[in-house]
Image (cartoon, rainbow, N blue to C red; front, side, top):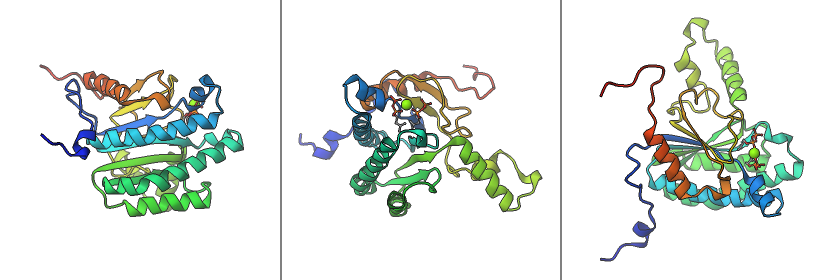
Length: 249
Ligand code: IPE
Ligand code: IPE
Ligand code: MG
């Protein structure tokens, strides 16, 4: 039988993963340590990490995951040396330039989570164009969290609620959710952190209250399909109770 090249390259979901999350969020950490282990400059680690982003997005499209959120640059990452910050900006610029067409063809909708202010003009306009071009795509939503901070997002939401003149009595969880960068999106089901740290580092503070947390010591540039499958298998075994009790069998 002859298979088309496209079909052959598609990734298959292993049978041990019966339940897939609808929204996966990833703290892509460990690029610097990946480089250090190889006696390379930190930016070489970021370059390798950026290469991995491409592979991971393709995998999630093939798995038909609804939402993928990638933490690429936090509001605190400005504290790093300016050469590293500039290098990270350049890498994101390159990756958007190279990948947007392909992502559009795969009907991926790109959304920016974060504060556009502070991002250099050229990069900001590249992000805006990518968001505009892909806004009607419906296959998978790819959230790029860039210049993103969970607390900054909440402050932003509160400011807009006040400036919209919303009465105190009308403020509830649904309203606050609708003022987040992730308005209209489901909360993440699975939150993965690579690189071994066991903290949230200001990521999706509002949205992740009931996300299943998965950490692995594997550094982001090494986070392969096999590692994703491990995380998805672990997720499939979790019992989500949301404060209630397990369903009677
Ligand atoms: C994650 O890798 C990428 C960003 C934060 C931009 P790091 O650069 O934090 O890598 P480590 O934690 O130093 O290994
Ligand atoms: C979190 O990683 C931010 C991103 C992956 C973009 P950091 O490396 O900045 O987090 P800390 O400093 O270890 O908490
Ligand atoms: Mg780090």
